[in-house]
Image (tube, rainbow, N blue to C red; front, side):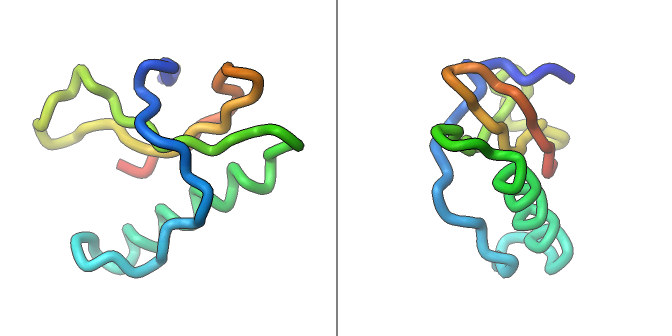
Length: 81
């Protein structure tokens, strides 16, 4: 699925912790690994942003994750939920 730039919610500078009380242990670790994957692909000036599909509303199965943004364009993304 192609991530849209209007889905970007906030810039993420620090890796998410692998422990999150609201998530099962493996889900928290998966989030951190997804963020690290994008960081490894980043070039100078790139940014990692969190995203969420607004069309999904609050229903279960909402598409969320991280996107690598280069010069205002999404060049790579990973989904975590």
